[in-house]
Length: 195
Image 1 (cartoon, rainbow, N blue to C red):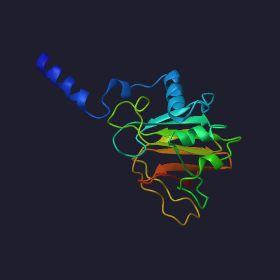
Image 2: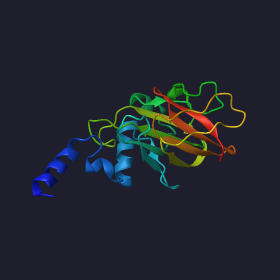
Image 3: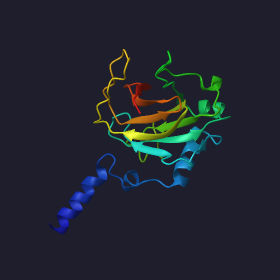
């Protein structure tokens, strides 16, 4: 390969979505914490004690890298609202599963929040996030489910399992169950799964 070809390939990669070196590397804890504080509020604390404390994936299936971070939002309800974050219910057994709720009415005690920021063409997700979401559940730990995964129907579930539009998040719930949190095309929703 010639020097000219190598330069051409490097230039091509520089303009492709998500090809920025800052988007492909794993961020440092300080970068994650700084971005959450800036985009969700100074009272929202990143929980780093139980790895992994963040997941990188394309949760909404738009081709840009997103991030999901475990947080403690206790006492930050007004800051979260002021930051334009959508607070959604992802409890599969709830009548409001998939709906946006009032964050100022939320009680954040004993469980864990997950702050999600969508990536955009504007730059790396930690620097220039798009839409921001928060959900709150009692779980430990969580893991990434690739978009290519076929979600199985949960026993006794009347609704068919979701067909993933993007990567999803698997939660090990403390109520002796597990759920998949996935993007519906408009919001996030939960669906029960086996452990």
